[in-house]
Length: 245
Image (cartoon, rainbow, N blue to C red; front, side, top):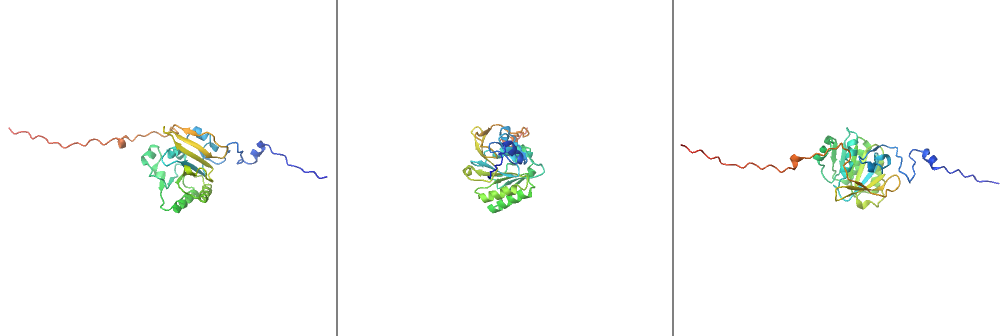
């Protein structure tokens, strides 16, 4: 008589010991790769590894540019390798040098690229990621094919570059190879609301509202000399000629 033998079911604790990259869908991934803190404790607590993952594609979805997405990243950019440049690829606006200087960010590290052809921008992004000589790459590209996203994500894994892509809200239901997708919304009060659409772990049910600035490393610099109206110019006047006796 033949009897079938079934392998014993491994308890969850044993499964987690099989490989450090193994994780349950009900818990945040115990990411083994390096991360960089966002500068916001409430946001770090909701991210695997307690920060932005390096060497991976991160998507930030915004309704339009200029709602505070760069301000969200300033703590992480400040914490990256000081000697390596930060690349702004195809940004919608020219960077405000006065603002970057006020954040104590060395503008000599800032590299702004604006290729005329879309395929040149894709090529530049891939080469930057593969080379690994840049601390961070911020890339604005829309529309973009999913095959290109996969290619860029694969290139990002060859280095530890902090890689963000800015895309519109309209793509939130589309599939993406990004390991982290965050949708940003601006509040009338100036706060920034974040909804984590995708992460390595369970769904994040509640949005995160960031109402304060990140690290106190960043001083608020006022540019009074630039903002004040120009002083009134002296008007020519006639000096009375003294009468001769």
